[in-house]
Length: 325
Image 1 (cartoon, one colour):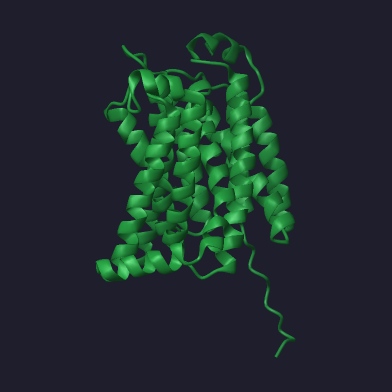
Image 2: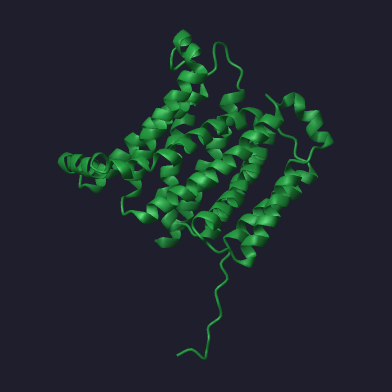
């Protein structure tokens, strides 16, 4: 049973990671009549859907009792305002990150984005060392060096990339800056959130409701500041279609799905999921989206990034000490 759950977890992780990136990329480059949907509004809707999903999960944990659900939400959120306010910082950063991912995939092909975004392993590791006083082993430091080398190869300009620039929907530099900023924000917010989870005993679902609440507020501020005129002119849901809603649902439920299956997935399995997702994104970008021309330098960089992902999660078992009683 546990083996089946592991493989199911692998399938879910690969599907979520790959489908979100590819559908988001396709939705941002698809040429349609009328205005394109606003990424800022999509982020807000995703946060609202996440809150709804988490409330349902808390309801289930409360034995499907509305009275128990109301008591939990009141006790854990309203009666603990300082605990709730702590989530404002990572929530604001996550909101920024989600908006940046739309910018990145509007300007980078899915394969290049997938590989480059693995730099979040590096930023997470560095923030873990500085904020949580974690100690990294030799294999982990080595993996970070390999990771940086691999991403550098992937971003290395080549003749094929110059020839395929006509296929690109935007500036690669803008996309790269968006991914790098998202990597730093992901690393910091992830470690900050981990620190909060370790300091309190609140459930992950309650914490995600708090994150979603602040995320919705920050998201609406972003809509007003950057797209206020467009919203007043064409409406909040301008350009929304079936594909847009798929992207929004995948973004909203993605993190919750990963949180739910992560207890069945070890680091090696997560490495497999990342590797398969990169390979699938590369193949689909080339054969279906046709916005990516792979080169030998890209393949070398991708192999290095995949190797680094596995190596970072590698945990050598210490040899037993026969002298110890």
